[in-house]
Image (cartoon, one colour):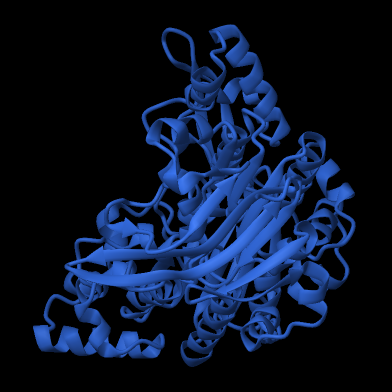
Length: 545
């Protein structure tokens, strides 16, 4: 008999995947439960089995490749493992909703936001068009999406990563589910928006009696949100208990390792006498807003609005701010990947008027590492082919053996075996894929590297490893980094100078030590408060100001 207070219970759940006739056990006889209105966290590194366990609840795994050698899952007294597809369709999105980690792959690229959020309401509630629009606007406001009326017709590619995640959360909450499965729900969000979303989820949980199964690698979120914790490693639950007990007195060595894992160390002191590698003066990137039948320009989106900076040899310049503040646009403009106005000087030479052909020889010196290593690495190419691509263009005289040696050396430098070049991206973990992305940038021996949220999708322990790797590479080569991030803990560990952006403008800048110890601007204070678990009410208020 099910306990009346228990909403969800998994008993001896196993998950296996079969490929090429070989079966791999991903989850091994795990048991967990979630009470009504309770928030429970599943924590562990990538590959530990967290998401696979959660997807099993509503049978969203790739069957028949996936199977369940053992186990039962009860929801409100019903065994979901024995439920028909018709019954599961009624439960999914209505009684049980899920927030997925990567919104760009979860949202339909061909449908506007209103249609995607509204579809959930039409299917499960049968609302008419007017009622759907009203409810969609209400949901978008609740999750902190600015100007929701203007966003209704927007497509996913027109939104930032954080905005797309907010749309996903709105969809999941649309029918006020009994259980919300949140798979890394705030990974793509800024610290202030993260604080708002977590507070929103807590409020909704209290108001609706909604339970949450929270899947995350961010232990700060777990401590703030969860009543109980299950720690997973390699498909097994190695420790469970109340959150306070787990954090204050962890018993298992792996739990202790997770709690100790965070970016450590300090950046080198800021050297204002080092040679300048890149500088800008009053740089602007304005996108025209065209209206009317003739599509005349009536206004501009001022993505970057008068930014002046200089980046020196051996320096890491951190660029922080919320989604839409202009961080990535600034980096792309400096790399001459988008049009801009204002001087851009690289090693003493103005490059802002250079054509594509004039820029091509400089590309080997100016490299980029993207946020999502899986999305930025071609699944059709081997690791060796991915890394050697730049060598084929920039140094066509190299022989096959020379290229292979260079690729092997680059892999060794980032902590991977040279033989990894014969494998494909899907065969590696998230942290290993990011090392491959770094190797691709480093194989050309650049002088300037733009790092666009390179650790945001990684586990805490892997984040710390990547920060150490980036620091070591910089020490060896005196590299200049432009480090774009919303994770201020990583910024503090790696950057020696910081600029804070909001709405395309720099609101504060200075040596990192001063910014973190004595921020002057109220917006910077709000970011730091939200990032380091101080008073977040002020941060939330500022975000919508």
